[in-house]
Length: 149
Image (cartoon, rainbow, N blue to C red; front, side, top):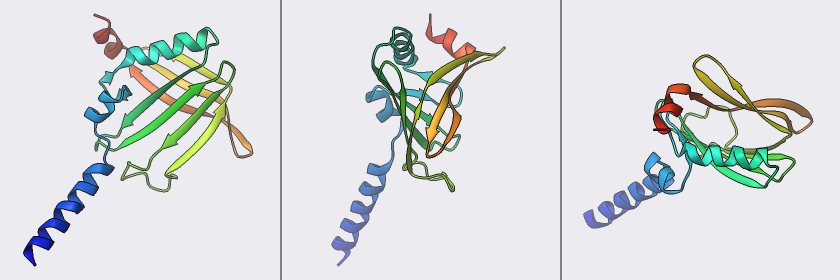
């Protein structure tokens, strides 16, 4: 009997671990990673922006982590005219009332430069019958400078 119990416990731990999406896995997958300060693989986001500027199709995955380490995945694609954003909060244990998964189409990606931040926002986003904006990514300027050396 104890062997079955240990097996079930081990199986349960494996299933829980398989559901997580830690930053090491995200790095291996090539995600742009926002850890509430440090940004990893930012060059992939820059390449995406260059493709958008040239009206070329492109895609990028951005993984934003909460302070507690819970990921929200943004799969963003551009077809040359329109942005398609798929949001996956299924691995975020503290998503609250937010849906596990959702998608929206947007017409524009806007970069705003503040004193300390670059802010990337999707504008003209259609979700259901409403049009809105969606904050995609905040990046501390010092984080970008650290990665350009």
